[in-house]
Amino acid sequence: MTVIYVSAGAVLALVLVHVIVGWSLANGLHREALAFRHRPKDLGVRVREVSSDRIVLEAPGPRQDIGHPGVVGLAWDGGYGRVGEVIDVQEARFLRHYEPVDGMPPVCAGDLEECPPLEMDSFAFPGDPGDVGLVFETVEYHSRLGPMGAWLVPGSRSDRWAVHCHGWTAERRELIRILSPFHSAGFTSLVIDYRNDVGAPRDPTGRHRFGMTEWKDLEGAVGHALERGAEEIVLTGCSTGAALVMAFLEKSPLAGAVRAIVADAPNIILADAIRLGYRDARATALMVEFGMWIADLRWKIDWDQTNFVARADQILQVPALVFHGSADQTVPISVSRQLEAKVPRLVELVETQAAGHVMSWNADPARYEGYLTRFLQQI
Image (cartoon, rainbow, N blue to C red):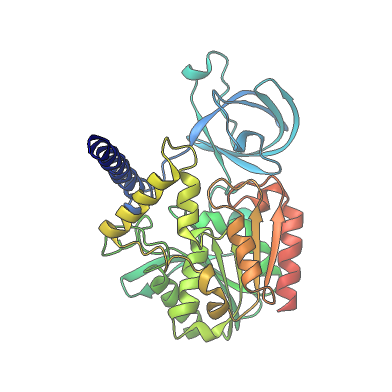
C-alpha cells in the first residue's frame, strides 16, 4: 500500500510541476505574442570600422543577422545604411560591403558593452516607397474598427491592384522591398496598416489575434480597392500578414475578387511557430503543450482555427507564390512545405538557403524579384 501511495504522490507531483510550468509558459506566451505591444528595437550590433563602401561589424553574442547573406539595413539614431555581402570574417568581426543612405554610423573604438548599439534591419529601406523611386500618397481606408492608414502607389493599370499586409508588430516599411516588381507589372499597390498598428484602432480584445480578427481590416482595404476601380486583386502577406490573407479568403464575401496571393514566411500554423519559439526553453515538450492548452483556455487562441494549412485545400482557390528561408528561426519552413503538399496544383514554394525570417529577398534580391516578376506575368 505504501508503494501505491508513493507512486500516486509522484504522479501528482509530476502533474503539478507540469501545470505550474505550463501556467508560467502561458503567461510568457501572452506577454510576448498576444498582448498589445510595439516591437522593441533589436539593438546589439556595433561598428568597428566604416568607410563609403566597407564596414566592420561586431556583436557581444551570436546573431543571425550580422552574417546574414545579401542585403540588410543598419539603423541608428538619426541615420540609416545598407550592409551588403560578407567579404571576410575574422573571429567575431564581419567585414561587409556598405552603402550609406543617411549619414554614417558611430564607430565603436573601445569595449563593446560601452559603445552605442545599432539595429540590423531586414526591411532594408528606411522610410517609404520613395526610397525605391516610386511615387505614392498616404491615404486612409475604412475597416469595421474605423479609419486605417495606407500607402497608395499608383500603377499603369487602375484595374489591377495589389494589397500588401505586413507581419506581426512590423510596419508598412516591411513591404517596400517588393513593390518595384508589382509597379513594373502595372499594379496599383495599397500597403496597409491594420488593427494594433501604431496610430490604428486596437482590437477589442486588446490582443493580437493572428488573422482571426485582423482579416476584417484587410476586407476593408480590398473594398477600398474595388471602389476605386480594381477588378483583379493580388494579396501579399509577410509572416502573420499571410494569416490575414488566408482568413480573408476563407471568410470574406469579397474573396472572389482575388486573382492570386504572394506569401513570405507565412505564419499560418501558429502552434508550430510557438513551439519553435520554445525550442530553447527549459521545459519538456509536454510542459509546452500544457502551456499552450492553458493559454487557449484563458485567451481563446483557437489553435485549430489558426492552422490555415489544415484547411488550405478549401481556402486556397487561386495561385500562390510562397517564399521561405531555410534558416527561419521564427516560422519553421515546414509550414510552407506542408502548404505546398496540401495544395500542390496551386502553390509554388521558393526556398532560399540560409535566409532568416522574411529575409528571402535580403539573401538574394535579384532571384526573389525574378520569381515574383514571372509569377505576376503568368497571372
